[in-house]
Length: 356
Image 1 (cartoon, rainbow, N blue to C red):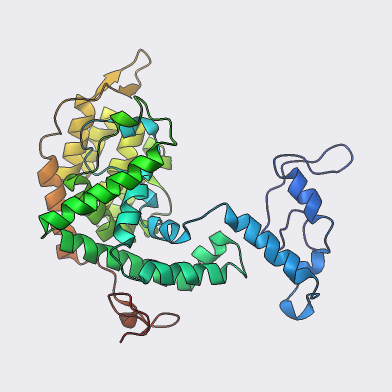
Image 2: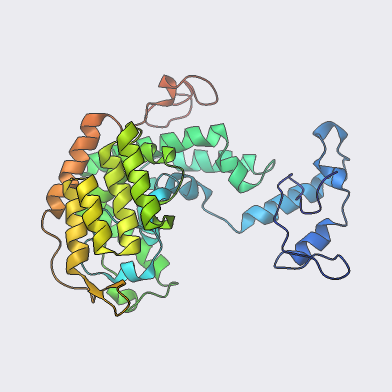
């Protein structure tokens, strides 16, 4: 029997509880009461579905997905999710934070990058929307086809960023566009000190983005987000990855730094320095030590922004980028080099459908 908390696409939603008469309660109670009016056999195979149920099913799937727009950006941002920081306090830091990527940054990066990808973003968005007719968004994003498209988006992003490195005028225009989009997104957020305290993205942030995209493939083996890990869990994760060589030290450096900014613990910084003696980790730990104040409870808080960037920061990012390029762990292979459907041989490195 189909559970009472199953949606029409077969996804099981957690029950929040039930009232004395058995009626569902909680934030999804009204939605569950609405679903309970429909025949649960709607989750049966297509061959046995009643034709009358199909419009209702399509309507509900569209409703569930309509609250999450910009699906292609979401697909692209999944590469950065393991290290993405959501703390509003980090938005008003005046210095470049070594290896830091905030959620708000992607609101600037993606529009500026996608404008330089020809028709690739439109193609991916169309495929996503077509697939959403048959499934919920999270399932579609995790499908083999969308995983392949995500690889193509990452590869194209790296090509755009590489071209910008050799063209100062193009880089300046790119940063101007990214900051304009980011500022518009920031206007809806509660940023300490107001929107005026937001430090504009600059060349160091472009280097951080490029390094993250180069190294992001390794993070999928870690099974979690660095900002969500407790200190002991993060240290164990770093030790394990280094012990079995499952993730490169450069990839672990960016991952570890994201956890360091979340916990803001200089002792964690010292431990990470010992585990990962890389310039980026050293620069991030040094910056944190110089910009934190201890509270009475021993917990450290981010001090008032100011001062210069941590010594070694620029060298840390340059070393990180060069190490990632030498390791070959950054650029994903083109779809033609990956066996199997759905994209093998369908597009080339530029993302042009049908190119060989």
